[in-house]
Image (tube, rainbow, N blue to C red; front, side, top):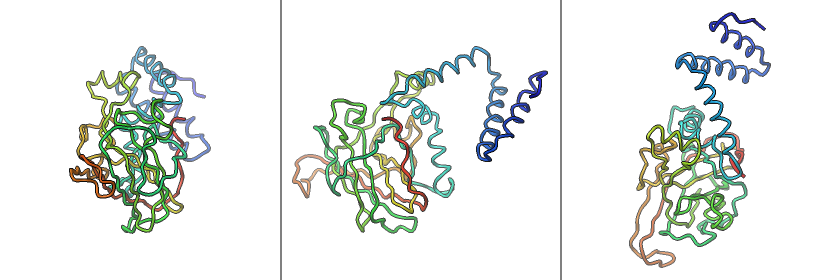
Length: 297
């Protein structure tokens, strides 16, 4: 270990240690991390007080994460990091559009199996009826049969079922299986936009930056089948507030679905009153079928 004589020797000394890392990918990541982290500190001339505050913020974020909330996932989205990682790793390494998107902090394992065309309402959930129709195709545009698809979204009060004890277990969640047509059809209520939590570190950052905390209305999708890269997506309603100013930077053109309002009687159930349909096509790429780690319990 080099005995340092001044500021100019700190980064080279650390880089020398990083270069001894055995695993080549970890060595690459740590070497680049030190280059950019030290460069950032030099660039802004970080003060001792600011450094102490930064470590306190990280400690606080860890304490704010629990079984129902993941503050680091929320922060990553609010800084655009989640979207950047997603787009760099999909769509031919960021060169083309992709229907891959953010997992979000509220996905759960073991969504209840639901018949195609069935309802994902499992407790009383007021709101205009929504008929969703998502078509899943490969890169050649051919429908994918036998695809296992999780569908979930927030309630009309802006809370997911695992945030809200008043909702039944797995409310607004369902698992579907595509047929030869590659379609998943489901019944629900129209999703709404909602604010992310503002009482934690991320909320205080938004306030300091004069940013609103809102996400546009969307439906989550997770689809997987051996031989295909697991698709994680969010389909955004084209008729919603905050579509162009999503606090989590998640909206891309390829993710905006077509929401259509219907004033006529529903063709299947004969419901009276306005109802909505949401249609979209999602593309899966060849790759590994692997489920993510649920962000919260």
